[in-house]
Image (cartoon, rainbow, N blue to C red):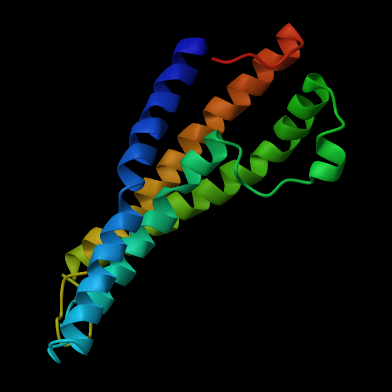
Length: 168
């Protein structure tokens, strides 16, 4: 069980460390566009759209890392007063919500992305890039969230067995 948790956590950590560069990429793109538009009077046709794409990938794929780091919204008023076992029980009871959400997102996101790939769907902008690579971020992010949800469930089961939360 611990090996499975460690493997999933490593995948999530690697993804999180790749994603941490995305805001910097966004910043460079936006600054480039601002300089080109306002200083050189030569706006780009791609900057706005690619910044939206980068932000979309960042948003949809960062959920697993947020789950691992416990960064999602929580009812801290009650939750922080619970023992480790109590927290594990609450987390186990609420974990089906993560599995249902991630499962539906994976299933529908996959259909959405595959349809986009088959049709070679393109943006309607002047730049006109293909959009299916961005759409594949939806099932990818959902799969990461599902995996991390499994790891969190396993951690909570271990907490119930051992009585306290331990680093895995």
